[in-house]
Image (cartoon, rainbow, N blue to C red):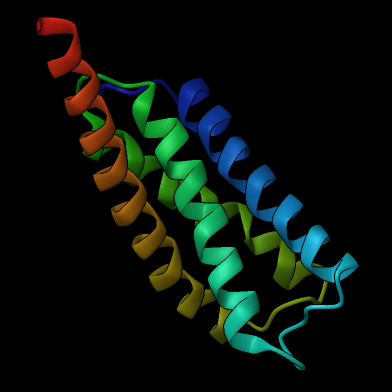
Length: 123
């Protein structure tokens, strides 16, 4: 593993913080899964993609491996939702698919952004 545990936990905390903040903003705006599930899901997805993009742009090598570790750590962090009674275990298992989608989209966007900025530096 080329990523250090400290870096992985830090980056997972960044993504977790962004998705948590987006959830608080949605709750303050009155958007919930019960009254507008597609908007809540999309906002959660976009905040996660933003987090993974921020984390991914900080890396130049082994981005995919690092983001995979961050995604696994983030998914593990979400076990607290089961302990607090906020989520069922089956919903937690299904949330892994959303986290994979966030990591894939965020990592792809980070790669595109770093490629374009590297091309600008060469010219």
